[in-house]
View 1 (cartoon, protein in one colour):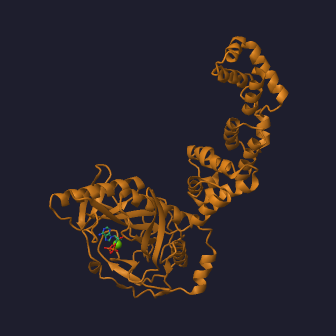
View 2 (cartoon, helix red, strand yellow):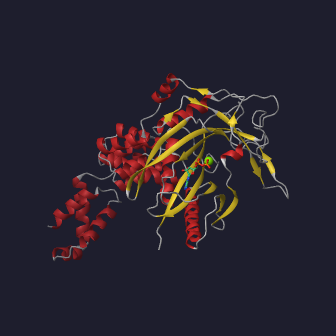
View 3 (cartoon, rainbow, N blue to C red):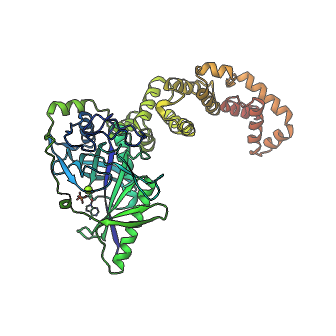
Length: 477
Ligand code: ADP
Ligand code: MG
């Protein structure tokens, strides 16, 4: 039996976070009324001239620096010619032979350890329009709002060896473009789209097999499913003695299958040539260095700093670095709170994350800001609150803008830490449960939990459990 090895390379289209189109000042606001943003330049009415959007160039450079790639000082816009209803001008402006970014990489954590995925290139290009099928009977509507939207196409080397690895890479890339403010990465709105190139070969073979390209898969889950299906389809063909045809396929999530869409076109079909309306793009060192200086601390660097400086686990650090706002929040809390970093990380990754998730809110808009959050954790550290109480106080904080101590006071959350008060409560419970006390003294350890529960109940849940435990033990001796 031949052992098959999948080979996967991804092409990801990332929408750049600009205000306007790649070659015009038209807005790119999502969800605008159809064709309201289809300016003369985006549809190439006769006589118009494209003008490069400087912000888009900056964002492409940011990305290049973020992945340790070479930022090309000279890049060239070319016309990629093809006919399609959503492209009335007959060509897409893209970069071809001379992309703005080349030769970077991304480290991913796989089950078998760290792996480096090569990024061949990233080039600037404009998006096409969109065909609209809803609300049209026997017709197709064309919305050209999206035409001319700035995209960065990020092309990986065929370095991935499983559908899972492809998704890990994709998630890392997604987090990275968001971290560096290159793109909002919104997948529902199409700001992060993936084409997957898939082939298989006998394990140990040096040559690549024939690949197919799966188009426009718009969720991490579907990427994994589509690639897995395609791997299995190709293996079946090869094991039956057939050959894989190089073609573009479409993933149908409803039927969980891939279908042939068109035979794969070659570069020559597009008759690329430098766009005569646009000069070459020349960047100088100063421009690039200014952008480099504006970059935030790199996520990988930040992660190892968290592990060393704060003794956090790789897992906790990774979680805090799921986006930059979360990491920033953590650092602000850590600066202002007396709690240790591990406790802070647990509370951010646990209770706060759950609260925000429930309310569908980003941490940047958290109803509990880092100052109040820090104070809340301090109240655990100074024993005003038990962990359990603090969880309840957190919910009150989310609904009430008052400061932490005011809420603790108002809602009567103060923990009982006064020893004599606790002794009094324990004494009461022991008196009322003399038969259990006797059982305990005869060696039935289990009764301890029961008595502990009775004391906490008598204290309305507010006694410091550690002290209750201690005092109960002493009085039972
Ligand atoms: P094209 O110009 O047709 O898009 P490229 O050479 O630019 O082709 O490659 C596009 C993508 O396909 C890249 O991500 C690359 O890693 C991937 N790729 C190339 N060959 C293979 C292969 N045999 N199997 C899987 N992926 C491949
Ligand atoms: Mg391609």
